[in-house]
Length: 302
Image (tube, rainbow, N blue to C red; front, side, top):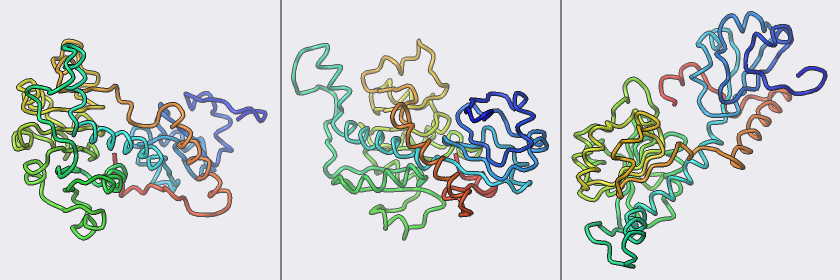
């Protein structure tokens, strides 16, 4: 801010003089990397408050070594993703997207030949990852008459039960679930976690929903399962992202792909700004951050 007028900064070199007095950096999507050089230019810096989700793309580990506090609005961003996921689960149960294409092409109201009609009553939903988003999805699934399975290495069976879910190993989760929703972080150890073997274990007519990261899924295997018609998919993320325009996944009636829009967009972004402002108010009042991130968290968060 110069002369009391807020400015959007895209390069720290543009505000080198002002960094000397900065105590808090309010960051957002596209923030340039905060390195040792940036910190050297900002000796008074106390905190970085990110008005978006992941901080891993721009916060260098040296930030934590220097004792600068870091906060993220990931919890606020998780809300619309969980809402999107719940809607996707309900629509997946109804096979709404196959119905849409069949009705558009034929004008026949129903039945829809060749597609399993599930609804959600009595179905089993598997939640892969009890992340912020995963936990919100688990909470929302309580409103449906479904059986819920969950897998997360940081969630105990007792904690899973508190969410109304049963903890199980991944092979069982995929083999027993009519619908699997992916909410794990993309880390070196989770890349390709949803393997060809796990996809093959899903029941015929199963649905994979991914609102996390495309790299979590073996997309070659998923494409094979979807082209065969054995599985359906609802994908807000893909690998690569976006898919090439000639990808068969973009044309299949049993695959519904959206352009990475489940997270905060439009009026939903207001939550992110409100969360960031609240964190800055806490700092000003000498209170601890509500959504602080420690260096030890980096190995298990998105």
